[in-house]
Length: 250
Ligand SMILES: [Zn+2]
Image (cartoon, rainbow, N blue to C red; front, side, top):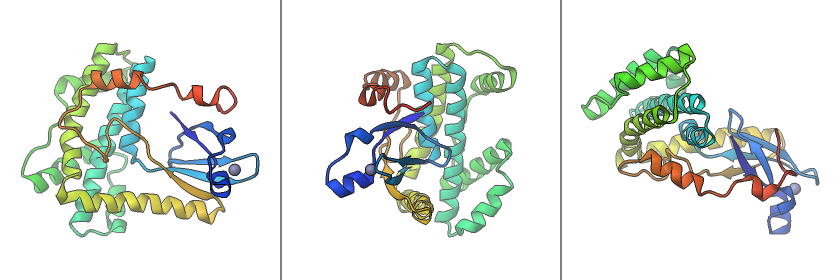
């Protein structure tokens, strides 16, 4: 998945954006997009959104582009990373230091069943309720796609994505409630701060980039209808039109 980037140093020096530096860049795993303009300015565009937010957007883009297996994989990733973020936020809210949480997470990091167990327990303790989980038929579809190479059709993919959104929305609403909002802001701020330090330490000017994503800590609706979200996504102008072939990378 790609976003539009622009040289921030050119903008700082001239007071206006240098449109010649507009480029389409792929989002790397750490959410830090490296860029050097023709004047030799070195900048890092740092994505503000957490991984689950970016994955939710990758999922909807994959549906729009017709890559249904990819869409299901991204929806699964979005939900699992949202569970992880909820566990981290719950631990932090309870006064557990980041380093202690990270040491504990290492014991779960490669085992999704353990992560799901930790999420259910954290949710139960926090809310007194069992969280909404993917129904059995959607779990079967997930396993068939991931482990058996199934080619899902569009209807199956949208049904799966909607089931993920139905599970994710109540968690997002909780994370954006008064109970969690200061903890969530702290975690997002730390994630940005860590990457700002990396950029500065390597001599790059850091700049923050905020994406509008399907799941988003910035705005949470009561419910999200995936077909409506796909229709809205299709109305967005293609990013390629802003740069032509000049600023495209493979
Ligand atoms: Zn520049």
